[in-house]
Image (cartoon, rainbow, N blue to C red; front, side, top):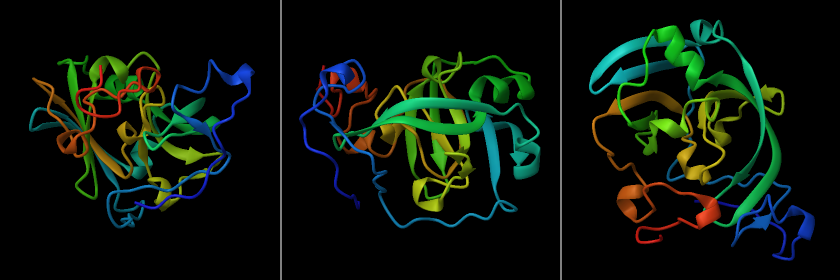
Length: 202
């Protein structure tokens, strides 16, 4: 992992409802990853929706950009204790991906998969109803590789390790299958407002 500095812990009281407990505000955008940054050209990029092991639909980069594009501005919170406010994203809502594939969410559990072998589990309910997207733009520009470009999952209401970088698939699963960090001691859900950082946190 690598990170850069962030501000101290004294917070503006007016931001108390935006910065969860244990977090500190940063204006930087720290870079953290479990391994080397993969470089995926958009001509090679594929995104697959799966039910269990079965692919339901696969989109290439151009096909993916024919789907409805949505802009979201959200606060984000990293388990390493930094929070960043008003981050601006553009991409395709998970709702619109499901609609294009012609499927309703078939299970309550989802695994996100990435080009580097990373995975993370997110309850399906936390991906739909406008809560999450596959983001391809950040602050109006193509998402840089260090931040997960060309595309990453964005689930801003959970700790940011759930927003898988370099995403290439969402897989519906019959049970809650833990992902990369969750198998290594991180919380299965990761609500920043409840400080669900590690296994055993309530």
